[in-house]
Length: 479
Image (cartoon, rainbow, N blue to C red; front, side):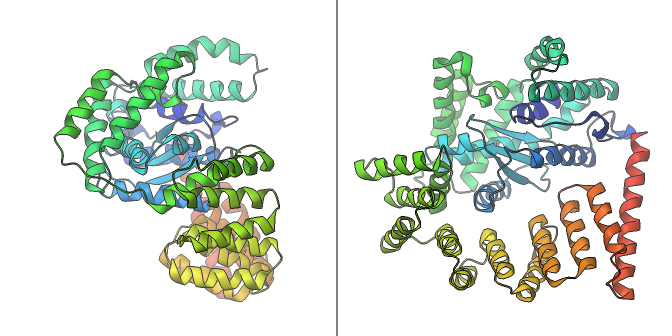
């Protein structure tokens, strides 16, 4: 890879409609001309993530995101090198791809999750991406580019993204040749790929996964790329594969003890849920019904779970409930099943039943964040705003900086009619997502709400001054 720009293009150019505004490009700092500092990387990553979160392709599903994050964090805890605060997210896209962004952000396409035949294969791709980050491949390459060159490349990336989201823009044709030239230069280097392979294998083994997953998945992608040369997986375009690399992986794996690893229950259930979201509800129902009738599935519980989700989408609640009952007879135990059961209760307008299920589920699976979010939302819907508020306050002490929790807290305060606290919580939600200006706007509204005591008003005003100062410093850096 000749420049860190490809990490932007690899991710954002694959998202239909994702845009970076030229005037919103983060300042990289004069002192960073010889290399990209961790602070500059994080600022750049945050800026890109702001755009990704706005894109319709961003999958805002706490169950799927929670699974991928848990898998990624398990791997990252065994990584060698620099370990930033990793954040894993999912993009709804059928293309087989995963990508790293500056600052420790790693995205995975749903197509890649569905293409993985085992959890170890999916873990192998994440381990490879994590290794690119921990080995500072971005910063090591940044020193070869001047600040002026990077500004040109970033501006061109903005223009290319704009042209892709609007094919009628004339600049698209003018830039198409330059874009092709850039993409030709910006593939990962063989040295970086081999380094990520080697460290990724170590990470897989130490995290308890089957190292053969890396060779098997990459081999299958290489074969796929040969069969469909003009429509090769996006991952092959950003991570050039060669038979030499595959052979090297296989040789390294052969020197390690054999380990058979059983996939987690959640791996199959998450994949089934994603399949249930494909196509129309009717098509999804028909697909799973065919699987169950023919018996062509890896696990019956996965197929029935996906079928139940498809039936829920198709508003066939009685049939979905029958599938849930069957899953319980099959002894399926998972927070995802509890979440599905609660969704069915809510669809039936049975808020009390949903609350009962979620209360028990949160006690049983305290680390399943999606269940906590669902419980808070159900409490708000059932008129238990004060209970919801107490739960958000408790959870934010355990996981400060959780944007979704702050947004739920803002919703809770709105139900209680506490406008100062509502806008203050919403400000923190925006800030957790890197949205400084909207956060300032919310704090400004909180300051003018007029329903807080002297102490609360002083806290809001102090926080508002702090964020305005931060914005002023960012503006100074950009000049």
